[in-house]
Image (cartoon, rainbow, N blue to C red; front, side, top):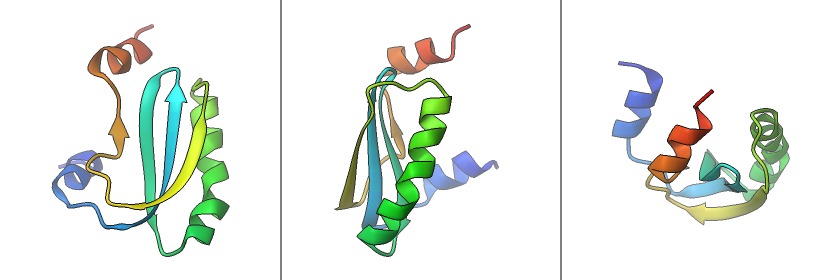
Amino acid sequence: MNLAEILEKEPMEKGWWVQIVSSEPCCTYYFGPFESAQQAIVDQDGYIEDLLNEGAQGISVQIQWCKPKELTICPKDELAESFQM
């Protein structure tokens, strides 16, 4: 079982999460949980940089107290297109 499969089966914790939404590809990403909103703010730049390096555009960021159901949410067509060469 790989890490992605393990994460899918474990329930997400409610806590402070970095939510990043990109317009291209049209996806919502969650990074966390963090013990504090301040820690999420400190760490968000690394996640933004990684997504920009992968070609994401139109990025907006929010720090949220939540319990996401999924770490990455993309319409299936958008996700498939983002991996085509």
